[in-house]
Image (cartoon, rainbow, N blue to C red; front, side, top):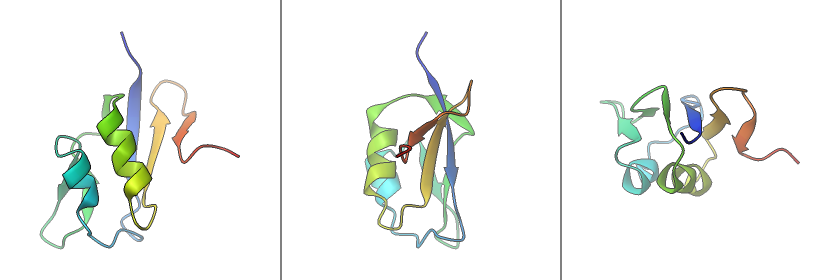
Length: 77
């Protein structure tokens, strides 16, 4: 079985660009206020989710390993 990721969006930072929904439509939704939120609290690790986090123009998305809390994105320096 593959890794599970916990996806979080800092809604205080999100500008509602929708780039995350474009990159990973199964992973993100925009609400009526155009604020992004994860479709589910945890998801199977996958390139579209990572791409969405990497391409967020305001870096509002964080991804951690669900089992350990270890950062996936942004990576620790």
